[in-house]
Length: 485
Image 1 (tube, rainbow, N blue to C red):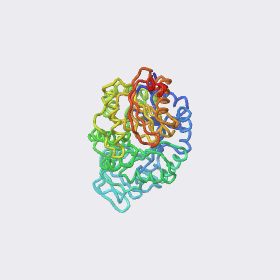
Image 2: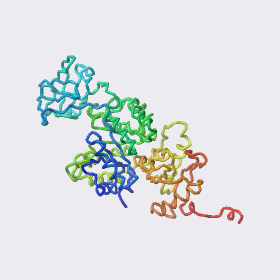
Image 3: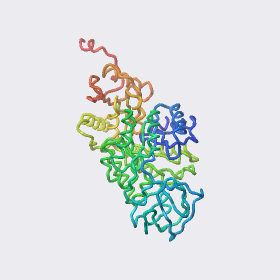
Image 4: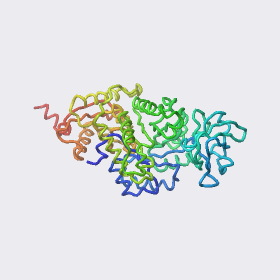
């Protein structure tokens, strides 16, 4: 059996336009990739189109996720591409001007209001903290900084100011361009960078609403504001990504494991998908085998019950991309054997209580009966996500009445989705779904399954849970003749 069909944890793989041929993507898909991430920091809408077209040639079930730049600050392009070296104790002048060339005379950053927002005593971290500066003096035009640890300052490197609220707008012009491109091309997810409050999510949603787009927003949590405001962010985002790279610079490193665990639990509590990202198998960019620490890191995220784990440079430009996906899949399969279903009920609001209670009952039944699968139909994706939130040990087969849902559910733990056309009634759906899964080899005639579905007269309402044997559920017995006998 293909690795992709054995694991429940989903894998997001970052793909570059420099390596995105169909054969390569097909191999990644068969090895376990569920979602393709396009990093807009390194591409254009035109170059991204090549990735989109080739992904869709491989499978219509692969989700497509596009990152925005978000309220990010970087150093500007250097006059000398090699940059310049600084040593501990040196002084550096820093100013905000996105159009100026940086040099040893003045280090410019991409945010014009940088000098006004950054106070005396603040630490300015360049390139994920490789170079650390401390603001010792400031004028109206520049910050005077002391180098706390030396290194090489280069152009277009990240700039972080831990503990300081930077008043950047939620979206830059490039973000708006990419979001409109995403709508034009039916992309599935927008991963919005550096989300601080729900207003950052709503700024993206406002653009989507203009065209009634169903693109789902993944809020990237990579600063302290995002962590502190996670409840309000989750109230309006489809899900979150724990972007540990910048987060590890913005908060103390020893806080990262606890923050990761807390964010996963928050998402589980409201039935929303969560992705753990950054340096999960970083050594596999250059080496065919991961380190023991990386294996443990991936396993720990799965033990904490994340929906998805992400690869960045490992698949975008690394020497062993297929091996990296295969490694993640094997770790997931091994860890998932140890996981037990969650017992407590997600807190998702009173309008979904029936679906939640039925989902909890179905997962509880799977602990006491030899169930082989959950089967459900969906117009919105809610029921499969609620089932996923309880982290049962058996697969969730979701039949989707909207094609886009088959890709949206590519981020949800344990969900295998299939497109379906609405039928006339519940009995027709049940027979169609069970027969389809049997014919695909997913179920045997003697297998026991749990079916969650709704009344066809009330679209979107889940109203019943049925447990039965496959051969009985698909029987065409004439009920009138049966009762007459």
